[in-house]
Image 1 (cartoon, rainbow, N blue to C red):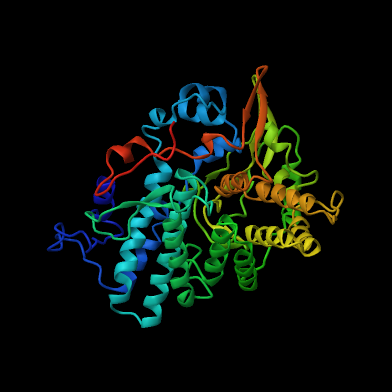
Image 2: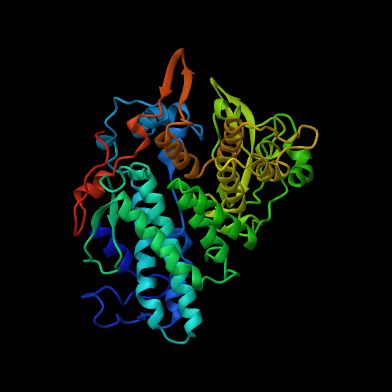
Length: 468
């Protein structure tokens, strides 16, 4: 951990050298500059390729939300262990270099710590401007910790959160700052407090898609409360977020505009991704596994079958293809994708779940169907109508998993539902005549820390949260 902090905090970045690297920057190196203005520090937030990405590859592998070919499964043992749900595999031993989520999130946290520590004492800015940048950094730091705790620790359960360990908590940009592997409850308390302190100072309109605005703060608060099964607070902040932005992208219009290309048989020409920086559903944008113009992941046939008939968002993104002995749905969008941020569709579906759990089934389905109408082509569309709570919730879960595929959220939701024990998530598949299963109680739902972290924990200690 210490090594990565040295690398992050003691390099030239955007032409600046960080003043918080004590013992390294007593004097500014020739040709560089110690940041003093608010603009100096705010610039670090714009380093999207380092600080604003969420690479949750192994969670996607476990969910079978992306297609893995035979050659990759043969070459990448950790990927195979998760993708094929191998409970006998020692993932701790296999996880020697797969550290993208861990170090990626802590890289961002180090930067956000730096901004939180220094923004309020910078120059050439008003107090309101300083507070806004400070608040934005707090939201981004909290989002990064949410990603870490929902990957490397067991999911939140009020009965055990006070005793089970989560991840190292670091709040200083000093390379020698101590870290403590706090309990799950302590980590969630920290996240909630960061959001609480930030909300009064978040601007209603973002400087860029990378800067969380007030809607993003409310939306993230709603996400966290949902993960804690606090449906009253999750609903409250979902409504506040939607009051800031309730726009939904019209995928029917996108499909019609690109129908000639999309429906062309045996053609895999890419169409442009609408899910980039200016996607109308964005509260805040963060990258996924890639931080550059690219294509999406392809998905397995079994996963494609869980989409609704007539889902043009699905049809606009993937098309079935057979190469040799492998058949899968090949990706057909290219561009940027908001896999690590927060969008309005997630908040609509949080609202729907919370309403259904409160017995307000009709209102829950109104929120759900508002989303579906922008996704399902008119010839296939019918409102989901039911008075049954379980039926309504299962429809909400299905839509949310499909809408947020290739993000961390379906994985986090599955863990939450498994801990609750009522709407359990488990999977089964047949490959080469063998049946594979992932049970709702499997230890695979919690990822091990990478060996690089446990062997180099910096000024602290790290205990694995799983046995293998």
